Each structure stands twice: as C-alpha cells, then as structure tokens.
Length: 143
Image (cartoon, rainbow, N blue to C red; front, side, top):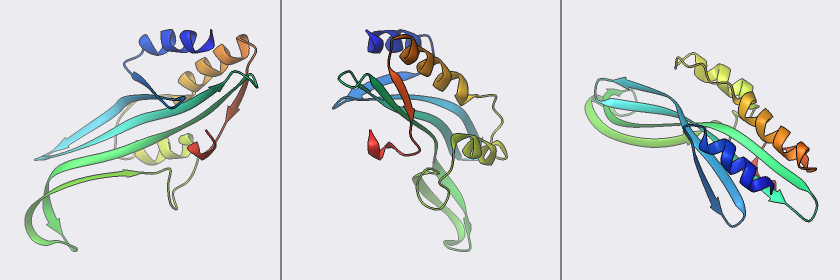
C-alpha cells in the first residue's frame, strides 16, 4: 500500500508524520538560530492526501519560520527589552512562491544544506511506482 511505503520513507528521516482527516503532514526542523535570548526556527512542512479512488496523491510543501524570546526593542515597540513569541509563514500573503524561492529567501538568514526536491522526488517516485498520479499544488487548500 502506498501510504505504508511513504511511512517507511519518512521513518528514515529526522521528521514526524501525522495524519488528520486523511491529510498527512511531514515536519522537521531545517535550521535554528539563537541570538542572545531569542530563538528562530525554520521548519519544512509538507502535506499530502492519498486519493485511492482516483489513484492520485496531492502534495504541497512550504518552509515555516517561527521565533520566540527576548527582543531588544525597535521602532514599533520602543527602547528596552520585551518578550515576544510569533509564528509566521512565507506561503501566505505577498510572499507566495515556490519552495525554491522560499529557500533562497531564508538562505540569507540561515545556513543549511536542505534540499526539498529530494523529499518531494522520493514521494513522487513512490506514488508513480504504485500507479498513482502525483499532483503538486502551490497551496494546501485543494488537499
């Protein structure tokens, strides 16, 4: 069964695989930055749905950056220190692009050797070998 082969592939990665209402998600930390009392984390997030009736696997992926910790003050918050916790995605809003574009954007902030095409390519190969069509989507709305 296709999903069992994908589970076996993901188990060999430093990643987690979860399922919720037929949508599977694969997540793992690509890079972390620690500066003073703050921490920022870059996470790879892929989601997919296996449609056995239509023999199709619908797949989407993105890089998500989150951060928490002490801030040193800025124009918006004024001088001094404060505690902040925030999570934001580049896949939503004006920075909507391919994961390659996202990776180039984050490459200026983080040092990593992550290649999302290896994960996408492996899952695509598993799907095609099992007789499924592989449908890459820019957003997860169609999953």
